[in-house]
Amino acid sequence: MLTFAASWIFLILPLPLLIRYVLPPATIQQGPGLRFPLFAELTQKQSSDNSPLHLSLWKKLLAYCLWILLVSAAAGPRWLGDPTVIPQTGRDVLLAVDLSGSMELPDMEMHGKQVNRLDAIKIIASDFINQRQGDRMGLVLFGTRAYLRTPLTYDRQTVKDMLQDASISLAGSKTAIGDAIGLSIKQLLKQPEASRILILLTDGANNSGNVSPIDAAKLAAKNNIKIYTIGFGAEELLIPGVFGQHRINPSADLDETTLQEIANLTGGQYFRAKDSQALRKIYQTLNTIEPITQDEIIFRPIHPLYPWPLSGAIILGVLLMLGHIQLKPTKVMVS
Image (cartoon, rainbow, N blue to C red; front, side, top):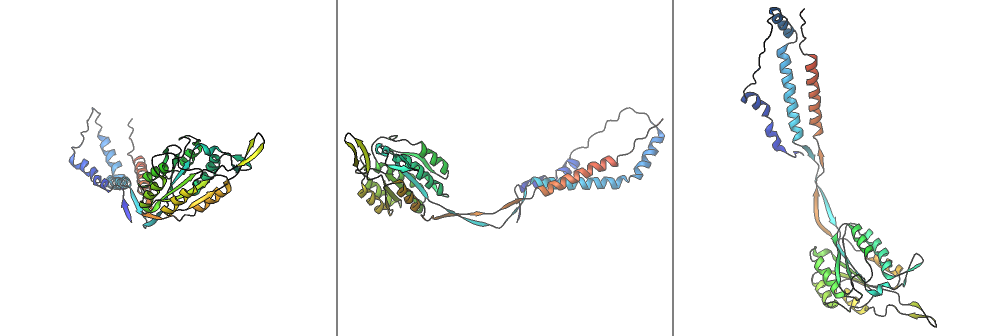
């Protein structure tokens, strides 16, 4: 379908006629000159040879056509293609990551090296964020307190950068799981109900904050927020001592019961990651969450057509210029 971006511009089409017939003609000042009787005859002969009436009509016609083409180009002609429906897919996914002091324990192995828990999370969670194309992602960090590091956004690179910049005990050395869930609920309530997802990762138990994790989970369930919980940390770690190495359970404080209940209350799932490989598999499982269909967008391709009338105007302008040069009356030299 042919349309114009600014069809009102066609209102100026009669402008040349208005200028010609409404405004008073310009006066030509006649200067002093030498009267020469033979010059009038020569001019009349030259004019008859060049058919002045025909030449004038030809120039006017080209000029009017040029003006119409220029106005048409300025009006922005365009061709609208057939409408195409584009479904919007994706979810609103908040990552809540524990930054308490226990995340410093070096009980994870990445690429053959021992790393602490937070470093392993940064690598694996970044891969997960990369794969969530089409989702809005956000980041909540929590320790003694919980705070929003990155609001929900399609800019996944920013979410990854903020996660990489996180440091242990940045929000305090304790663990406020309930506050982290409460802050996440506040952010997710702004989004469509069917797409609210929270992935909470911790290596301990709730020992700080003002909100009970179970109460926060019940509130999340009422608002259709699904929570996936991940308990992270190895169950065995060798610690050097005076009488040699001895084994400890670095995840003894992990409250799996509460994490399981949070997931059950909200329709999510609890995962246990005892090493980096298990954590990677968990994120791969979460990555298979089926995206939901949100509001559809109707798209109509637009093909601009203004180059055609503009090119025609340029060609007519060149023809007028050439006609003026070639048909200009010849000067008569009188000796």
